[in-house]
Length: 570
Image (cartoon, rainbow, N blue to C red; front, side, top):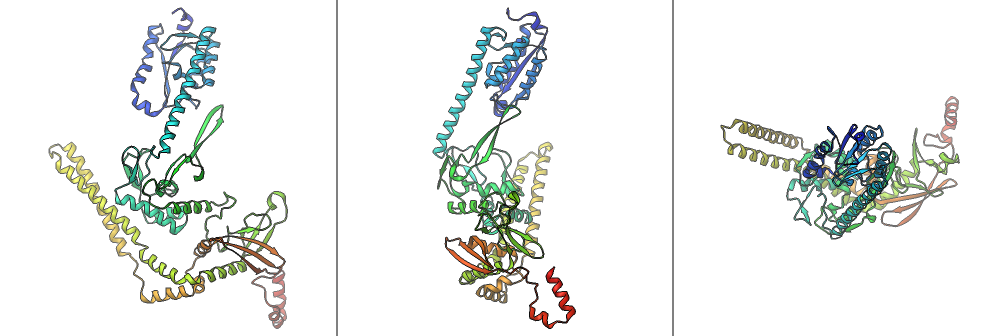
């Protein structure tokens, strides 16, 4: 090899090893052997030994950050490298930027590039031309492979047959279709999440309820659906995934997420988790398989989740919070179109900042909230009064079923635990008792399953002992009376602000408000699409619910009059 000079041999030889994905690292072992075998070739060409850089195993050469490649470039720039060994040009780089940077550095310090086809000198114009063509072909090859793979995946997705992963609650029934999991406990747990969201209206409240009641939800132990199913207390992403995945509505979807490319520190960075609106998905096939909910319910859930986003969308109402005010998120300014905020002090007020913060302009609107809340509550109760009895009956039924959901989950968990214990016992009985290395381990597993069964039995006993008594006839009559008089139910001590807000949001979509003189002019947008107008008298300046009537002040002693007038001035 006339291109290999003594000056090259006195410097180091580096073997660069790379495979694109973790699957290739685990399965394509022959490629690894061939790349590591380049150390022997370096010895054959005259180098006493070769350093191996394999930090980029499982990393793509298409432009992302590669610590091993950066280490290689740093060593070349120091002038200590006489030759770089690689199986082929595609191992070194799959994009023109990295490839030509490598050629430039090798040409400056006189480092050779050696692959299975030959030895190349980057200082030689002919070799440099050949290396440039190899790099271009490598980059083009990667683009072609990627394009073919993506088009093949899209074509299969358009038929509704592409399944990279399978959601919990479903199993593959062949290569191109899925069906509901036959495990009753899994199906019931998924259905429970949707029922609780319909009741509690927010993802966070569903999560809080599950963790307070110690309700376990199924999850896969790894990224592949074929891996073992495990039961654990849920976290927010688990509940969010179940409620936002269209697969549970019987729909097949592809292209729910998109990639966003940016450049950081001179390198390409791809973020692949940007969610898209369901109307922009590449493929959406409804009624593709059996679902846990209908598509109409899925759409309602997505709208409710979007409305619960506080301060993230112009039209969102925000989640229900614990404040005393009933209309946060529903009031919109008729002058600038922005939502009104609520400000708490001795009482609470609604106000529209408008351009107050950015332009130092005056606030569009500001008014006390108690009077308008009472007027809106009366308007809502007048419309809901015919449904009061039905609501009372629904409350009775809900109370009777309130604790049954947790009991059902415990019963299903106990049945599964008993099955696991019986299976462990059969394994222990089938083992040779003389082989203590096996029998001892099987006995330990059996004891663990028996302990799990006993723990669930005790939990069920505690749950049954703590069960609330059924409604008495007196309680039923009282509840029905409240149903016939919703105003009493609304003002009862047991009605929380959160409950009242949920009732109002159920029937009202939005309220447009303006101040005309001493009157609040409201346009109520009902959920069914109707619009009604309502006028509410606004307090005059200086008047509040603590103001004392002038006739009362005149009857009081002079000292009391002085204190009263002083308080009113404050």
